Image (cartoon, rainbow, N blue to C red):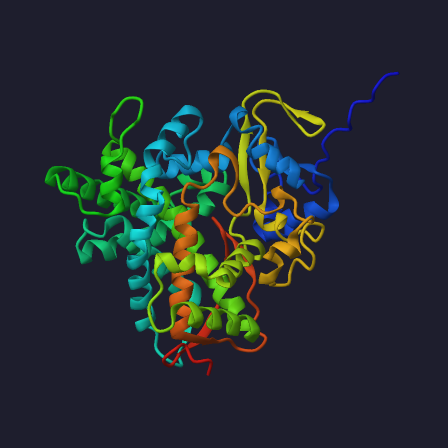
Length: 456
């Protein structure tokens, strides 16, 4: 009896010569990728770049396998390759043994004791931001969260290494880089060589950020001091095999990539969390009651975070419904079997966390914001591990996951206790995919809460 070979991987409709599926992606990238889950099977092919083959992996078990079992046989693919070209080689963009070495060098900067030290800085920057919001006036929440995220990251990384004027300049330049990197990654390579104002602005801002970081590294090296910030930790990190420290250029690439990858995602998640808390009075009441019970009148500390399970579920549900990742790529280096198919070397494999986390086959009522879906008894027996990947999985799982969760919990606990938001009825806030998935314009008015985080 002859076994039949599996049918070829289906190709998504609508591909055009030279453009592939670029038109659909430019018009509505999230809608296009989400439609693939309902129209095709576990694997579907699209064209992102002329001459390349991209296979979207849509089954959670296959995604998990791609990130864990197949990890050693894959490199990081176009998205991370372009990130490396734009921002420099870092732990996020490195592959193979270079990635392993970088990760081991950087791990101490993201260890629990260091993250615990960062909480005071995170909370102070959040309190400072809240103090600048005019009561009763509408606030562009996403822009405010971008500024806050940049402030928290920059003060954590450079707390003792930059004067105030240089810090403000760095924050402005990082904002330009963050807003431009998504288009650079997804558009054809030739597009970034067109001498347009936006390309010149991006290049100038990126070069300015590198120059600022390089100068801070050089000054700290020459001083021989330990400033107690992350930059100082990176400066003293060594390769466990060679004993060699990171070079100034390597540190610059790590900080720049961390800034772009971390602040944009943090800002978006904070914005969505505040939006959902504001829309549902019951959720807001539950968050405030937990904060009042645990904290009373004192500020949040690192040791408090494990004692805030409801707030943690709010963050987790935000990462599910409003995940910031819309296309994560890997590339095969040899013919690779995934499921019952084999794809040739050089094939781009990709998955979309945003679409995965909204699949009704995996999450009942996927568009409902329901923090209690994460109670153990609710999810028991019904949860597929590969269905929820807020920080990826496998050897390339986000190195800053604990840092990010600490930052989110600290900022939300501080903001919600001090500020009550109001949103206009029927305001439509939709997800928009750039480098990450972010909310479209989100305007809410702010009102100070009284002592004890009053509910009024």
